[in-house]
Structure formats: structure tokens, C-alpha cells
Image (cartoon, rainbow, N blue to C red; front, side, top):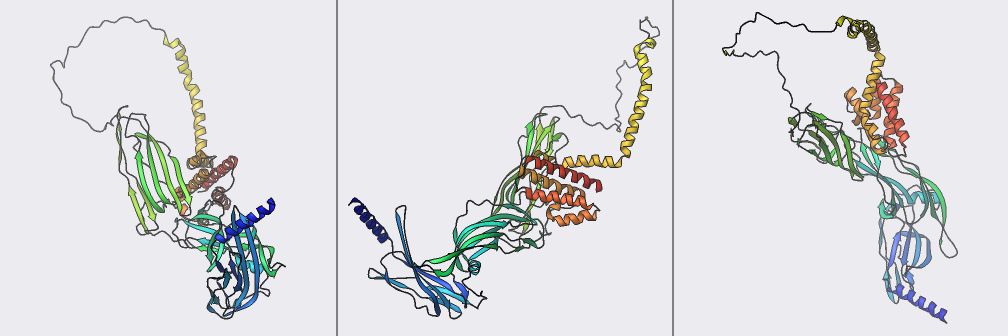
Length: 587
């Protein structure tokens, strides 16, 4: 009896919950746009039991080729009841144009409920396979892998983003996905944007309703002009597609198939930065920035340090240009700056602050001037250049050694002779000599040491002279030593960042570009690797050396997004050092 009571109570609660819902009859179509020779599926679903006398629309201008098929679903989740009863038809348009499917109706409790009318756009006939119910054809029509680019004609250095979306219609189910080929971004500085999960969203594709997820998103900054290609993303997808047949209970039979999908190739045409109004100190900064130089102390003692901070804040290609360098008087000893970056990478671009921190130490007492600094950037929104110039700074050193004035020995200063009355005195004509006892120098050890010293020093001097002469004549060795010193200079920042993957490879890439800029007088950060190869070939650099240089550049670009150990970074550092040494020898 108790069991019967609980069952009755459960059914009553279920009926009350369903009855509390607002009754609606909803019409949905598989596509809103199709060819005159294609078919579409329309489904009428009601969310309440007890419906009878379902009346479909007249389907004027359409031919019913299948249906109606009925299905019923009911569930209880977390105390909430859901119910759905649907009537499905397969129809085909009879003519082209904008056609309307009228409203269907159903009676519930003596009340007639109507669905919404739906507009369908019918176009020219399209090529169809022999079997429109072929699962591969159905998959092709209902799944789309799309690459969407925010801007196709940016300026060089201006950030854009690419987003890969997978659109899936409501007619089929996706069971498994896997990327088989990731897109390549040749000619772009790029960084992937983190996506939190893969939430399913609703959207439109070609005017039709689809579910979609964002698979991948990346920020791209073009580094050269010309026609740049974003290669397709490819992936395998296991999907369940309807076969056009139904089982004994009227449920649609589906079939699982695995099929490869690929996004379309995208073409980006970056524009050159304008030459008109381009400042001489422009260093490749593109975006919207603020520039500031600050001094931690302007009053200090000798050998007491102060810090100068050079900072650029804003949004743009913050990681792709050098900050202006501070110039100080020789009396203020300046040390190599420490680079600090606090940036965020989002779909809207890179934003944050990049700064160089200089440490200066005065040597002498006095007041010293640190000249102003200028920073120039190009704003792609306003399409013009801006230059920001800071004020001069003065450092007052209160305590310390006095800086000796430089005396000009070539200037003769005339002085007046002052007569005191005692300028001339008598000459002494008598002396009082006394004998002083001294040791005999000619028999001392010092005498013999001094006597033999030239005989020892002459061969040593000859040996050192020959060594220096041989070193001077060793042209290859001198070039090698000079190149090693130069390589250490340019790679010093990268060496400091060993172990920090992102910072190390950025410093390494920057060092290679700065080296070519110093040696060749060109802004290599704004040109492609192919152009760098052409420039080096014109300088008669060996092909092996050029290939090694380009490989280090490529690896620096790609390694930031791979798992890299400190040992691999050290090997990459040595490769960069060797290629700079070899390039300098040949240049």
C-alpha cells in the first residue's frame, strides 16, 4: 500500500510540475537558406502532455517528402521535470524566392496553441550527390571549421587576432575531435590566447542557426609587408549523422563516421607605415603609448647609487621594439639596464608596461645634467606618428672628491713682480763641511742587481715584442677575438635570462636583430627572414652561415611555445654566439 501511495504521489507531483510550465509549440528548421533542389527538416515540438489533434501547416510552395515522424522525451533532473513531444517533416521547396512556412497548431485542454511562422530563402539549384542521405554529404553540410580574422589589412606592427570556430548544426552530434595539423603563422609574431574551457555557444553561419565552440585563438603582429598566408587548421571529427531511416519507435537512426575538416586559407595584406612625418628616432613602436623617465634620487653622495627608469606603457607591439637609451655625463658611471616587462596578451592586443632600469653612481662632487629623451610611435587608429620628449634631469652630488679643473698649459699668465725690499740678499763666501760616513755602493747587492737587470730585461723584452708582433700579424685570430667580444656584448642580456624561456628567447631574437642592425645599418625587425637572407647573400656570406643564422631566428620564434629545458637554452645560446662570431669574421 505504501509503495502504491508513493507512486501515486510521484505521478501527481510530476503532473503538477509539467502543468506549471507555460505551454508552447515551437517550430525549428535545419536550415534557413537552401537550393531549390535541396531538402530541409522542420520539427514542431510541444512541452506539455495531453496534446491531440495536431494540425501541420499547409506547406504551400513546399512538397512533403517524409514524415510526420513522432518522438516523445521526458526527464526529471534535480527536481525539475521536462517534457517534449515532437512532429518532424522532411520538405522540399517547389520554387525560388523568400517562402514562408505557416503556423502549425495543436489543442490542449480545449485551447489551441500555434507555432511561429518561419521564413525560408530558396536559391538556385546546387549540385547534389547521388544519395542526399549519404552520411558524408550530411556531415559536409552540417559541420564547418571556420577561421575568422579581425582585420585583413593591418599596418606592419599592428596587432590582429585569428579565431578558429567549429560550427555544428542541431541535426547531428559530435562525439570526438582532434587537431591533426595546427595553423602556421609565417611572417607574424604570434602568441596563443588562453581559452578557459570550451563553452558551447549559439550563433549563425550563412544565415542559419548553429552551435559552435572556439577551438583556438591567437594574437598576430605582421613583421613585414606583402601577401601573408595563414595556413588552414585541420582536424578529424567523429560525428553521428541521421541516415533518413527510423526505428520501430519512430526514432531517427544515426550512423557514426570519421571525417577530416579544414578551415579556409586566409590572406593578410599588411600595409607599410607611412614615410610622411616619420621621426628620425622611430624604432618600430606601433600602438597607443605613454612614455616616462623617472629618477629615484636627485641629491646624493659620491659612490651612492641612483636609478633611472625608462618606461613605455600602453597597448601595441610592446615586445617588438627597443626603448630609448639614456645618456649620462662621464662623471656619472652608468651600468647595463635591467629589462622588466609586465604585459598581458589578449584578443584586443598586448597591453602593459615595458621598462629599462639604469643604475648610475657619481664619482665626484658637483651638479650634473642628464639630457632629455624622446620616444616616437605610430598610432594605427589615428594613422599618424607621435613623439614624446621628457624634461632634463639634474643630479646634485653634495659630498665626494672634487673634480680637478683642467689647466691649459699653453696659456701664459702675466704676473706683476712685487718688491718687498728683501729680494736680494748677500752671498755666503765661507762654508762648513763635515764628513758623512757612507757604505761603499760599488760593492753592495743593489749595485750588482742593477748591473744585471738590463741583461735579463733585454731578452724578455725581445720575447714580448715578438709575441705582440705575431699577435698583430694574426689577422684571423684578432678577428676571432674581436668577434667573440662582440658576441658576448650582444648576447649579455640573453645570458642573464637563461632558465626563463619567454624572456630568454625574446632577448636572443632581439640580440640577433640588433647585431644585424649595427653591422648592416638596416632595421631587420621590420623585414622577413627571406629579406635577411638576400641581404647577407649580397654581402657574400657563406650559405651555411646564413642558414645557421636563420635557423636560430626560427627556433627562437617557435621555442617560446614549446617545452624547452635550460640545457636546450644553453645550447641555443652557444649556437647564437657561434653564428655571430662566424658572421663577424666574414663581414
